[in-house]
Length: 233
Image 1: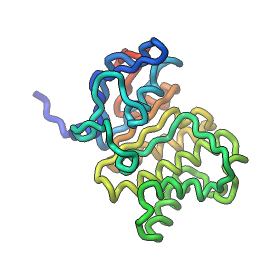
Image 2: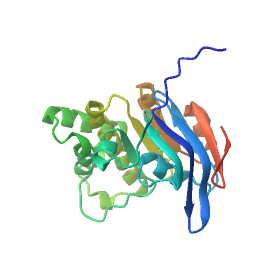
Image 3: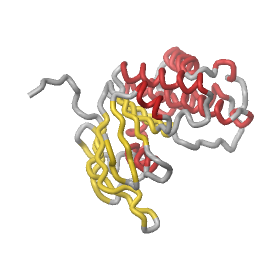
Image 4: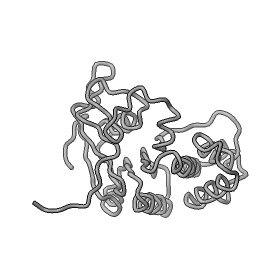
């Protein structure tokens, strides 16, 4: 037997399935997210990638199968409990009200760390803004930004939430649904480099990507979905 230092799974999906409008969007899919590892999910449009991320985050419940966090079911866990343990960057996050970039990133931290010291909050927000390369946008209304700029702001918001969660839970996860879809090449690489650093810092990271070159460059593991099923790992 070959020895391994792979940590036990943090977030586990065990044969989950979900049906929408009579169609099996996910069928018997199993996935393990491990601290310190970056998992990339690939597959064609309609393969079930976004639904998989929504189930993994606890946003929706599977019709069958189990989703567990450190071995315990996440079903019924309150939003504040989930927010302290995993941060999510969704594929689409439109903002319908005026809000400055700095304030939106701050909301990510405040979702978990509103009682943390002000200096800790400011440090975490500044680090998230720098990692997402949006420092020059901090005073802008999010609604005035390009699609790629908004995407980077939401990445910063997720990073700020992740930083606040460090106090709530030692082991955390970052879920990124098509985080580079609207970005230019330089920012695609920059975002994935940031995700890689976060994984190397001990966070379990999962990202949905379409670019196989990016996946091959940064992932520890690539999972392929097709027609709602696990096609390859």
